[in-house]
Image 1 (cartoon, rainbow, N blue to C red):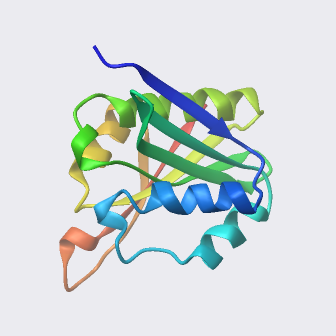
Image 2 (spheres, rainbow, N blue to C red; image 1 turned 180 degrees about the horizontal axis):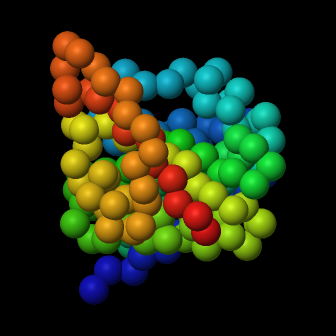
Length: 152
């Protein structure tokens, strides 16, 4: 059995922003993702939460989100490194984020995903998230963007 730890960060300094970038880079699906400037801009605009999952002390995954409206938390980015998939880390991170959001007084969590991430979509649906909108990509249906939300 592995020792799994989830670390929560809510104060963002230059050091913690660098930590965000380092955990973000362990997920191959994010290779051509957001710049450090975009990440900083979103996290420094208001309340935010970074969750870092560690397995035996090694960073294995993360979940990152921030407030978009007074009672709405946006679950923005998250993932688990390939070597650690199948351990239930994504589900643990999601449950931690939901509990934290509820404790902070948020009423709803919003999230977006794409058809090309079926594991994420299945996890969200099985966790009672509801699809509220879809943005169609006429050239590549795997890139259709799905908007989901859950009352917490």
